[in-house]
Length: 461
Image 1 (cartoon, rainbow, N blue to C red):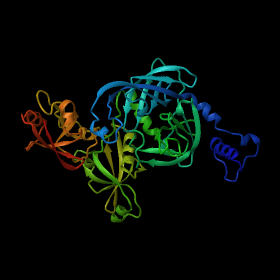
Image 2 (image 1 turned 90 degrees about the horizontal axis):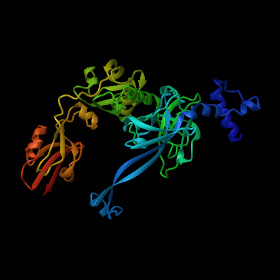
Image 3 (image 1 turned 30 degrees about the vertical axis):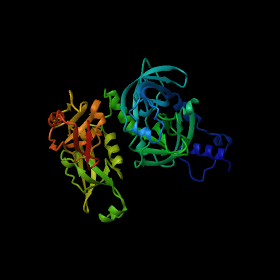
Image 4 (image 1 turned 135 degrees about the vertical axis):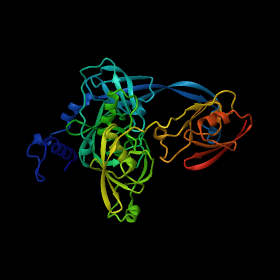
């Protein structure tokens, strides 16, 4: 059988509704059924995005040197440079709400959106979320625009036909076809995203980022975000952000939020693999085991303990920590979620409140100024909100480096370091840091906790 009739027949199966397995095309009309009706429905709501941002570029004669480039990375004059980005977007409301990728429009100073019918609009960013690689735009002066409806991405199955629509390589709007190749892809980091993806073999190339992945009813299944490729060209392994998460992000944008707020779990969790399943006497690996838990965690308040295995959230199985967070994020702040978990041989259910990480106790932000070797150092006391913002382990406590400027940027300290001692004196508060930073000495020794390891930094002025 030739390839074109086979593809057309597959399209007929999806477009026409259920058929019996033994049914074959009975006429030339049935054989010639195509994706054209889906494209006519969906394509007008997919736009091209042209973004500009100003970036600082340091002019250094050592920039490309494999050895001296790193040693002299802060050497040379900093000059602003205009950086252009090309991508795609999806219109989700007739008044001009558009979703795209953060890596396409994030930090852009100017955004131009061009529709399929060549109308053009300036756009403003109203919400960003680098973790999911999503950004929501509002078109200026737009009305009565074509838009896409959301599909239920939880109902999507592997093998379903989908179309990827976008602007690859800037050649203009292009449609490619494929299937859903996999679900719940969460053990990877693609683009700016670090979450939970739908995998497709529909070709996605540079410029497709932010475009639409649609089903055979023309509904948005996901937002295309990245590919895995050594050459930069599509090899049939592409990823899209599920529509259910996109809908949650857009809802918060409409509510006036500038950044996406996720429910706080306050736990460190790990997928149960074959070794853990054997240790827990499970018939097969399933769920995620709670390794660490903050005392104020909603899961702790609902009765969960370290060592419990979370099996499902709101009836949906979870088999990785990102998948569990995806389920909670889709549910949204202020709601409640039903958790099923195993403790020993007993399976239990409970309900947790979905809250933002509490910003208590006060973070006591302080900044070192004046004549100090640490001038420009910003520190905060760690609390649940800080843990969430900086992606720290739930058990972390103490005084954290929140910013580094001026002299402090040259000390070897990093954002996220927990300061333990300064020149032998223990640090118990942010005021201690400010006070000890005023010490008049040329020799400095600062001990920090970095990625779970104790590190001693020594420098001389």
